[in-house]
Length: 116
Image (cartoon, rainbow, N blue to C red; front, side):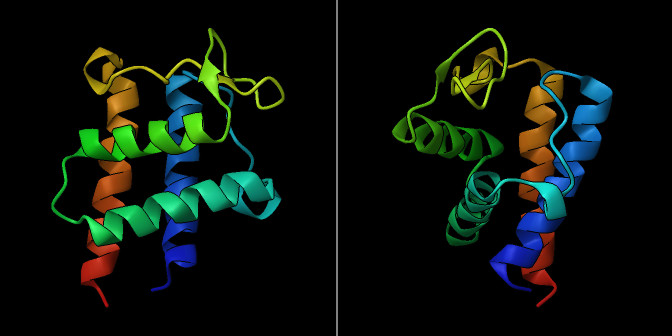
């Protein structure tokens, strides 16, 4: 499977989790997602594929690094226009439901990488 296909699966799983956790606004379906969101997801998949044995916390660290490099900052609410996000904090301070999204992302990428 290509990183783009894996990213779509991860995105939709993250979307489903966010529907239940309500920790940030629910993102649109992959087909309707902005290009920036898709690029971010594909980048996360490519990083994971290159680091299959890394902990889920490392996935969060990489996500944070990419967001900060793109100008995002810590904010009370996720706001794509203002580039603020409440999860721009160390992994150990994340709520369990937010950590679950990192774990699910990691599990999906690893499972689909093994299926090829």
